Image 1 (cartoon, rainbow, N blue to C red):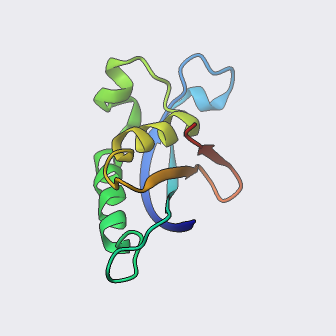
Image 2: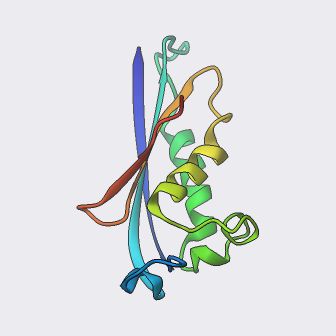
Length: 123
């Protein structure tokens, strides 16, 4: 089994509805997202996934959130989803899950800070 990872960073703000503390107020983070792809076969160049393609795909999603209020993004707003790190990890997973077939998106990590990370692992 082969695994490759790529990451991106972006800055944005959010607030957590119904949270019993300061995070209910609008505040910002410098987020880091790490995406891992796994598979059993390499292409003719000896790559599982081109790092540039993976990085470009995650950057495209991050750009939708960068320097805005995550709560206002249609995915979170229209579905009444609280933009927790866990839900942001799933958002990235949902957007990326079919882009690198036949390989599998095996993990999405979202770092809210250097010390706090949420991970989505598909079944």
